Length: 437
Ligand SMILES: [Zn+2]
Image 1 (tube, protein in one colour):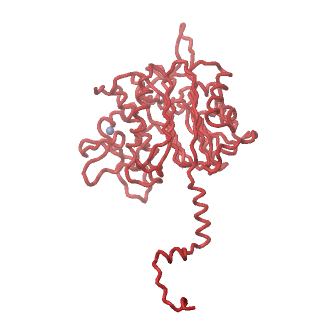
Image 2 (cartoon, helix red, strand yellow; image 1 turned 180 degrees about the vertical axis):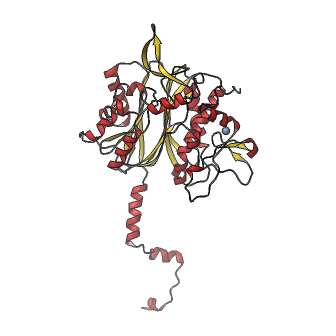
Image 3 (cartoon, rainbow, N blue to C red; image 1 turned 90 degrees about the vertical axis):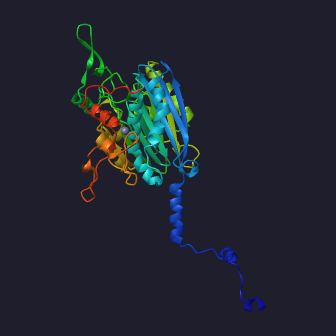
């Protein structure tokens, strides 16, 4: 009884232990829903390769960090890097340099969301910078690149060439995250190459008979985009097609592979051949399936990456239903049509499309996130990230990218070296840049 009359002398510590602050139910439910959403998925991967020429390279970095040392900012990088022609030096160079060049083009001290928004443009800058650096080595080989960044449920794919990346989302919908930069199949690219001063045609042999796929001349490459290839025209550009999607909480599977796979298997066939199996086995199965139908004619390599909800240990098998609506997407005729796959993807709501841009015009790809440094009076080149005094640099006017209401700002700055590269890619300058080593 006395206790009740005695004044209470309790430390604030005790109070909080005795009486936890009340949380409204709505907040609790909201938090639970949010937690479910932001729970990081597992990323599991497998790779398989059969070498004919030994010119295929991978880059696998599952534990990168946006903020070095901070595990909560982790993301994964998977790149399929191949050398199509003239040796392995371009593939090795890209494997060593590309990731750093991309990351250095992303502004520091920004939020995760801003980082993801800046990533597509940083990929463009990183690809072009890597190409310029490789040209300066004075070597002639070239490589296709398919570069995949996975940050939780957001997948960003940048690619030049024809090493396709497909997404098999839960629900059995297979979609293409890359565009094949093959002259044979890509009308837009043929037109661009021709407009920039290249010639497109087939190989002429034995008294004028045309053989093989469409190629561009000089050089005779079947691809319209690559990194390297210093001995072909500058109209073979390193500007990647970039696509960014957000998966549903059910996750999904990426299959990234060289043309050795895709010449033998359709996207649907590749996805179906390994559904429900762990990534390591899946990659081997896809390679095996391709060999079975076509034999070993080229380097045949495959990377399978599963993005798995953390409460499900493996991707559940999907019943093999027919999806007639989508099967038509993956016929040869539809390969170059990215708008088709875009429409269908959104229609079924399996993934959220965040970004897609494939233009080969550099000014259209570098428009935001590269403000001049007002404090130092220096301007940073949007491609190579080198600081320049404004007098030394040239600006690319891209005012049309800003909404009418926003304050017009001059486009990104390019140093004279990167401006030369830009002009050359657009066919404004016929000669190659001087090798600067
Ligand atoms: Zn530059």
